[in-house]
Length: 360
Picture 1: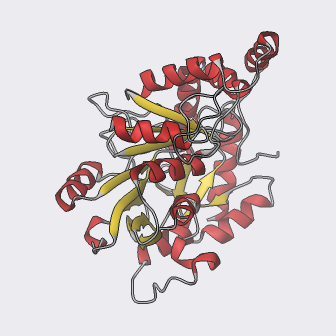
Picture 2: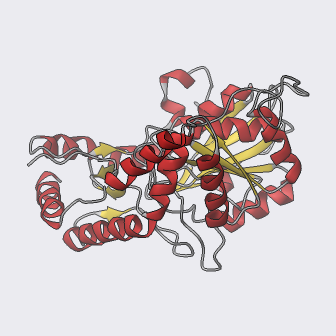
């Protein structure tokens, strides 16, 4: 049996949505994108939001609009996808890495954050379909220190707390990704929401060559091209219509794993104040590398969790030798992402679990 880590969930409904764009004979950013934007804002519960070509550029666009740039420092949790840190360097600012709470709680450890005169913001990444466990404390910490809060919510579309407040709306900006493996996909694509209308206004200029609207060659500000296409807009609308069934499928797969692996592994800590839509099913064993290698012999694609940022070769120029990242290191040593996708059968989950338990 061959079981990949992930399969994109696209079907004939999505194909029909793309056909509609060609029939409309307008493939650049247009009416389908506008409708997709409106529905996203309604889902997220934000007044202000714009598209970006992908999740990394969504972070970059949001930070540019907040005025983050050379000479600034942005605190980033040490366990996250490298795009979180790379988007900071794109602005000219410096990422400062901070360890996570524990090997199975990937929230940034607030007690380890050192605020300096250069600290402009904290970027928190909500990973694997759950929200950071200390979200309320992070908001209070940023407010009390008068620094900005950026939410990398690439993996958490559709996730709200018990009061209905959506992940990504707690910070000054929040960003989402629609890459092929995300809960809903447009193949590539990103979205940025903002609290402040002035930040939103700035993003409108930045994303469209320094003008609010296309069709004019007068550019009041310096801007760039962060537009997407109506092909992506139509695909996004089709995916949104299936979001409830996608969520149900992901939760069902997660529960199947829980049933099969109860007592054998440790699961990623989930913030119970928020809904949980598993982006990946993440478990922890004594030795992830050897267990992943064992499963691979049986056609199962397990993956490690994110490599700690302070150990990335491309960030070796930043001296972190005097800082402990023991929790990030333990997370990487023990964490495994199990195959998680819409359509994964109970039989396939049982096969993964059988070989995982044998490989522990």
